[in-house]
Each structure stands twice: as structure tokens, then as C-alpha cells.
Length: 447
Image 1 (cartoon, rainbow, N blue to C red):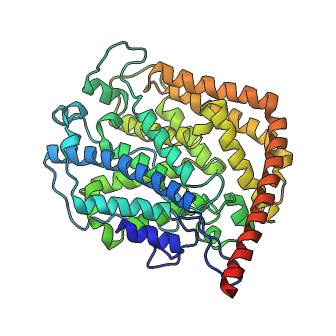
Image 2 (image 1 turned 30 degrees about the vertical axis):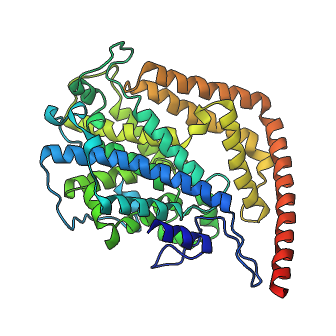
Image 3 (image 1 turned 120 degrees about the vertical axis):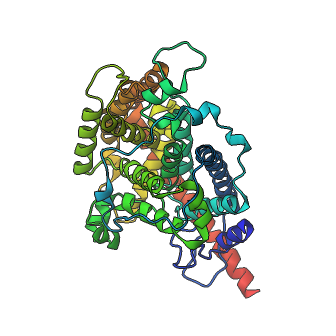
């Protein structure tokens, strides 16, 4: 099954039987002549390794979901459907999600997820789904499979740092206390699975240019989504429609067993993916207001109302997603440089191909400083403010973000010049390689 998928990817055939695949899993390029397809086998192998890693991560998290469900004695309801806004997903954003009440009999410390057998059908469908989603990522420099996988890894890493008492030196903390202080997230495997799932799909079929450019081009997607959060809504639609196909029925049953779970999964998916949009004024205002209302008190209240608990839960999950989406800016200087350059290369290609009007050479230095000041540093501060994580977690993210900003302020202008020089060097080498490949292909055709 998976071998057939890889073969279709290598030959450039669509993995989507209902529609042609615009952006193949492998970096396949076609010339205007009838020539053999040029396949980058190393890139294919790399993408396949990442896909396998994502499959394993989601499989382990899905086992936790199933373990709790079985412990509760819940049975799967077949054919669960929930209403969705196909062309107006923006309207599905909620201020709170209905988190399940804490049940000490099925707390995480009492579940044995390792003994759960998902079954061959569920595991195969999960694998097929992840490979299919992976195939929807183009070979952009930044919005690609590598970035998707790094985001998933970052979300999982932050989830493991959840603790009950800030600054506590206890080896283990009571599950009930942990549930209170994480607003139910620590006791709800489905919420944790959903936010990692959101990380997996959030840039699927990205077009390599920002939403604003699609609006200027009057792209069909811009019209469909009313010029708002275009690429974010598109990725949700693509991923959801894929998941709703008949061949993923068993996978859906493992993810959510009833309407309540389906709604929670969908709401987290929508809120988290749309939270990665940093330019929509309406969404920005809504998120700031939601955070202010959710965390307007000081300290950790141990007796929140259900409404406050639900509001804090979705704000926390959005924070996980947002912080992970900019993982490079809160990592080491070397990692930040790597991903900043990749993003610069992607934007510069848009400019060179005439899709973007402004040369990033002109604005990149200042825009990165604004990126730190308006997004990275405030998010790092929220990791401490929410009181959910270890004190060292918030301090570490904030320290790294401030250090990277300081480094960029001092070295950024030179970095931009170096990135541009490398871009031109890479393009020259690619042009030479393409010409050589075409000469060899034509020779083989003639022979």
C-alpha cells in the first residue's frame, strides 16, 4: 500500500484519485519538451523519513486517545458527522472548547497506552493519511515538509514540559492537580493529538507566497475564502476533506468516537491552524481579547468556572501552536539563521519570478526585528504568564528569543547580503545542472 504510494510519487502521478496533485511529494520538475521526469531521490528519501517520523508520533498519541476511551468504556459511533463551514472556516473560531471533566479513574498515570493495539486498518490508514498530506507540500524553501515536521516536534516537546506547580521540585505531581493547572489539557489525549495534527497539516499546499499576494492576484482561493486567512483555511479544507474520505473511516473512529469528540477535535484544529496567521487584524484582536479575558487574574486559581477553564484551554493550545510555528526564533542562533535564510530564499524567489513586488533585500532586516518585537518575544512571555509550564521553559524561550534578536540587530544586515549572494550562487548551479540534465536526456532520446 505504502510502496504503491511512493511509486506514484516517484513517477509524478497524483496520490489523489479525485483531483490532480499540484505539488508532488518528490521534487519532480517537468520541462516543456517530452523528456523523462527528473527525480531527486535523496529528497524523496528525506521526505519519506520525515513522514515515517510523523506517523510514529501520531500513532503513539492516538494510542493514548484510544486507551482513555477504552478505560471509560465508550463505544465508537459509526458515521459521525458534524457541520462545518466549507468556505467560511474563519467563522468556526471559538472562544472556548468543552473540555471533559477530570476523572481520576482514567487519569494519564493509570492508562497503559503501550498495550493498546490500534489494529492493522487504523495503522495503515494513519500511515496513508500522513503520506497523502505530506504529498501536498511543495518544495518551497520554508513552507515544506521539514518545517511541518519541526512544528510537530516542537509541539510535542512543549507538551512534555507541562507541570503542575511553577518552580516545584517534586518528582511526581498528582494528576488531579495537574489537570486543574493545565485546564484539562494534560488529562485529554484527544486535545494533545489534535494540536499535533494541526501542526502536521497547517501548511499543506502552501503556494509559496503570502495571503496578501493571492488577494492581489485575485486567486480562486482568495475568492473562495473571502480574502481572509486564505492559505490557513485552504489547508484545513484540504486536510478535512481527505480525512472524510471513505477509506479513512477506521482512522476517524480511532480519533473521535462520538459527536462530542468530533466537535472538540474540529474546533482545536480550526483554532490552532488559524492562530498561525499573524496578519489578519480581526483574528489578532480576537486572540488578544481571548487571552486577556482568560488570564486576566494573577497567579493560579484552583477553582475556575467551567467557562474560564474552557477558555484557558483553547488559549493554551493556540499558544502551543503559535510558539511551535516560530520554533526557529526561540532556538539557537544557528537554527534561527538556517530557517530565516530559508524563508528569505522563498520570498526572494517570489520576487524574482514577479509574483512579489518588493525586493526582500530592502525590507528583510527590519521585518525580522519587527517579527521578534511583535510576535516572538510576546509569545515567549506568554509561556511564563500562563503558569502552566516549568519556570525554566518560559525563561529559556524568552532568553533565546532575546538573544537571537540581539544577534540579528548586530549582524542581520550582513546576513541579508550573504543570503542574497548564496541565493545567486545556488541558482547558477541549478541552471547548470538543469542544462546538463536536458542535454543528457536529449542524447538518450536520440540514441
